[in-house]
Amino acid sequence: MRWTFLAAVALVAALIPPALLAAGDLPAETRPAPAFQEWQVWEVKTGRLLPFDEWAAALGPLEVIYIGEEHHNARHIEAALRILNTLVAQGRQPALAMEMFGWDGQAALDRYLADKDWAREPFLREVHWEANWGGAFDDYEPLPAFARAQHLPLLALNPPKSLVRLVAKRGLAQALTDPDMARWRMNDEVFVDDAAYHDMIVTPLRQCHGGLTDEAYRRMYEASMFRDEGMAKTIADALRRMQDGSAPEPQHRVGPIVSYTGGGHVQYRLPVPNRVLRRREGSVKQATIYLTSFEPGRADELRRLMQENVADYLWLTPLGARGAPERCR
Image (cartoon, rainbow, N blue to C red):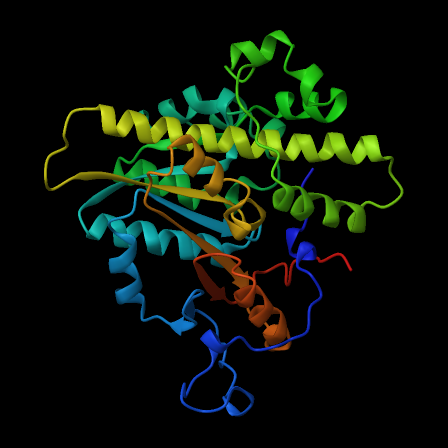
């Protein structure tokens, strides 16, 4: 089940934070608000509007770049491809990690990269597309196709959907005793139950899916935590493999890992980035990019997202073909 995590943003007063205001010597009440436009990149901590080339130079040395999208938005695929192309032009060899694929499809992804003649239909069957994600593969195909054309690693980011459903059905403690958990090496994992993360997940669940029992909300929350911890495991394990391998040739600096997920998995760094940081004992250079469709009427919401430090960077894109994402109220 997918939830719209923008509903979790608290309804606070639409104050413009000082970092977002121009003319720094003016009194706060007289400073102009930022003029949001499509394709702008905002550095959240400073409120600076960044030129793309300057921003790209800052992304290059990172170990992990988290891109949070609105699902099935072609403009967000376009944005991710721009970052990947820029990294390749910098002489990097990024590894693309995608939420849309489960671990039980990794062997199929490896064959997809190696066999340029492998037809789409058998690939989708073997990668378990319908079981793990579903919807039109066309919406996401440009990303794996880019990895294939550029000879880049492609990582299945998600635990198999069957494991997530097991947690949602039985609860985390009981689900971890299932033999499939040991098969996928999740039975001995540490799951950190962070209060801020709990609120971020459960508040929109109650808003969007009212009337359920407390036990149902708890199991849904634990399923979300399980997924995020599993994705963090994928990234942390990949980082370790990259660092344990032989030194790459200078012209092909391996990395960064580019994680492509829904925006809810990067918000406030709580879902996946902080879990990777914990697994790496605080030693990882990473940044979060929050993609969001720009509509002029959302200016106050965008200011709140920046004020609340939703990510390291806020990237405004045009609306996708499906229009604005649904939001629970």
